[in-house]
Length: 47
Image 1 (cartoon, rainbow, N blue to C red):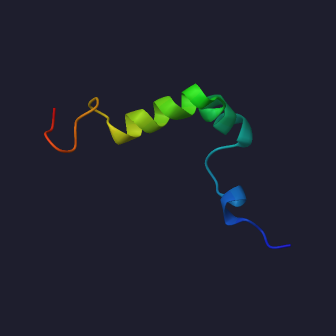
Image 2: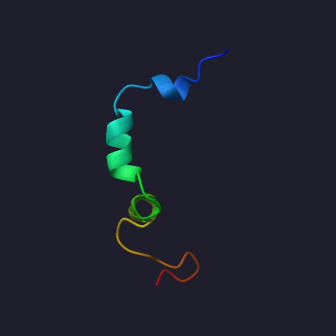
């Protein structure tokens, strides 16, 4: 069986990952902050 490179990346253990992204709400919040670090802005008008 081939190894999955993602499984062997350094930096975050499974425990740490689950602490940060273990629930749907945590995932949503992280993605929202990544996509809109200064709050939501409309891509068409900027508001």
